[in-house]
Image (cartoon, rainbow, N blue to C red):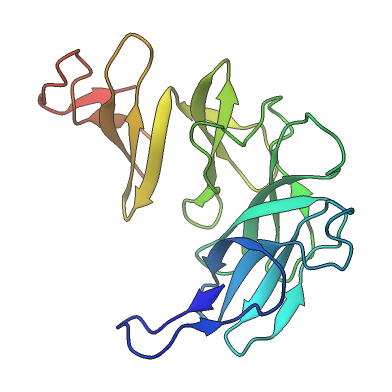
Length: 219
C-alpha cells in the first residue's frame, strides 16, 4: 500500500513493506491511518485466514483481527468509530456465504450482521465493499438467482431490508447513490436513490434503444 501527496509531488511511500499482499483500503475518519486486508502471518500459504490491519501514516501496523476467519473490503463509518467488512469465520469451508460484519475501530466487538439473509454478500458481477449511510446504516450487495440486489443493514444485526435489485454497478456520491440496473429483457438504465431510500429516480429509460427520457420515480 502506497501513499503519495494529493498534488502529486514527492515520491510514493510504501506503508506495508515486505512480501505480503494487501487488498482494499479505507481511510480512517481523521485521515491518520488506513484500514486494509492482508495475509501477513508467517504461514499465510497454508493457513488461509485473512485479517484486517490498521496502518498508520508513520508505518505502524496494528493487527485488528485474530487469524481465525476471512476479512476483506473494509469500510470505516463516517464518525470513525466502526469498521464494516465482508468475510466469514472459516476460510477452509467452501462454498459458503460471504457475510457482512462490523467491529469497533480498534478491532473489538466483531460480529456478523447479515445472518438474517441466507445469501452471499460477495456478488460476482458487482463485488463491492459495504457502504455507510451515516453512522447507523450500511448498504451492501447480495446475489440471488443470478441477480445482484442492494440491502440495507443496521449494525445491530436486524434482518437485512431489500432496497434495490437487478443492478450491475453502483457507487455513492454525496447525497445520493447511483447505480446501473439491467435485466435480461431490458437495456441498462442509470438511476439514483436519495439518502433516505424513499425510491430512485431513473435517468435513462430502459428501452432497447437506450433513449434518454425524463426522470421518473422507481419504487
